[in-house]
Amino acid sequence: MSKIFRFFAVIIIGFFGTFAALNYFFGAEQNVPAEPQPSSLPTANFGFDSPSAVDPAPDSSSRDTTPAPAPENPCVSKWQKCASIDDLFEKYNGIMSARASCKIAADHSAKYGDPKWPGFWSGGAFQRFSTSDDFRKTGLIHLVETEAQFQNGFGAMVHTTVICAYDLKDGSVKDVILQEH
Image 1: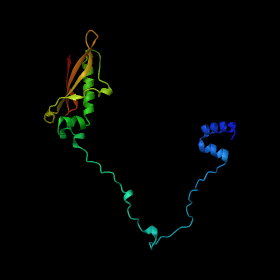
Image 2: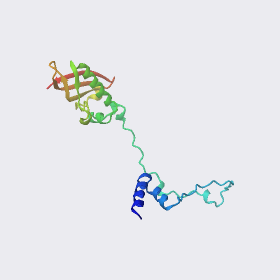
Image 3: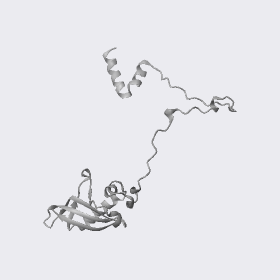
Image 4: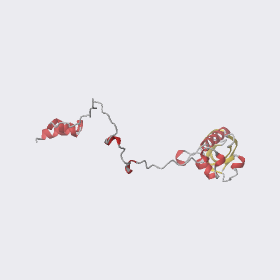
């Protein structure tokens, strides 16, 4: 082949793809199978030794091998059913609402400016909690944030520990305590 022919072949391959270029230069026909046409004559199946009347044996490869879904943990929707405080914070769906409510309440209790909270990559706000398991009796949990920064009267950001008392019974914040360190 000449150099010019190769040059144009490379350009056409780049623009149209390999198969389009081969079809263009060598005239290859596409062998696309025709779609099967439905028979225009009706067929009757009376069930006498007809292969279609017999169900094939179940193939082991066609069986659904996915495990049955595990029953839902009752702690997911009811905080009273959680076995421990760790179980509550890992599985209870309402814990995100508690974290958000505590953050909003702490924002409102800031005297000067807007506080800075831990970001997404560090886990977000209120990743710590009190370890008392009496939440089933009282309905109160204590969320703790040690990495928050609140502005003081001089405009400087001060590292502050925020302790939030959250009532699981009615879904409200009962108290927010700010401790500068």
